[in-house]
Amino acid sequence: MFDPPTLDDCRAAARTIAGDVHRTPVFSSRSIGARVGREVWLKAELFQRTGSFKLRGALNRVAAMDAAERAAGVVTASAGNHAQAVALACAQASIDAVVFMPSGASEAKVAATRAYGASVDLDSSDGAETLARMEAFAHSSGRVVLHPFDDPRVIAGQGTVGLELCEQVPEPGCVLVPASGGGLVAGVAIAVKALAPSCRVVAVQPAVSATLPPTRGATVARGATIADALTAPAIGRLPARVCEALVDEVVHVGEDEIADAVRFLYGRAKLACEPGAAVGVAALLAGAVGELGDGPIVAVVSGGNIAPRLAASILAAG
Image (cartoon, rainbow, N blue to C red):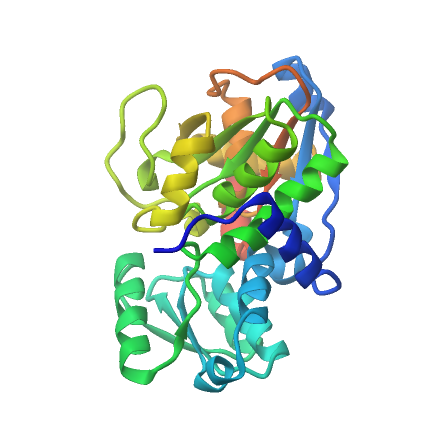
């Protein structure tokens, strides 16, 4: 089993992927700040290439592949955002990529993945089956697994989000990060805790698809969520180790709270994000976070790959 990456690994990843990713902006939100009594910033990863943070980890992992691995090709599993990132990263490196996606995956995300050049398999019933079939196909074909979250180079790539936000918002008091498989929150926690040790790192999840127990309150039975980007069947082994050591709080938010946050970000911040990206803001608006620390608050808005029909239904419901 690999060890989790370090701050130096995140910095190395930043050098590796520089020029291939955007340095995404941060925007202040007076509206949220007025509610929580603190300066609030939004780290807008929805403006990243492929529409989410996932390209950072995919590019860093692909860059580490040797000639034999590149010739063998890549296989991965994803509900959609990692799929698009792997497809683009592999296309740029002339690597053949196969992606296992659940049968109910967003049509927009499937189409984008194919447009970037990957082959897509939609015969899996859910996220657990996509991961199982990915591993089986890798074993039978000799392809390299580019895991969506349980890989140190992927985590280090996602950690570049934390490096950037600490430069953009010096000495943050609290960082809220969407979490599912755990690659993003692990990477951000590694970078932020090294650069701003007193900062609180809060993992935020949909209650019905949570992979971590909440710090406070009762757990909720798993079910369907509008946050399709946060539907990993379980947290990865490496991210779990990082979260246990570095994440200060785990917050679960409800479906109505997520929808409210999507509408808020669209109407007040002018950010057309996907539901999974809005969970940090949902936690703030709902007053669900136990402690917010002493400095500015940063909510990572992790992606913007939302189908027009879903966006219209959420906005209309408000």
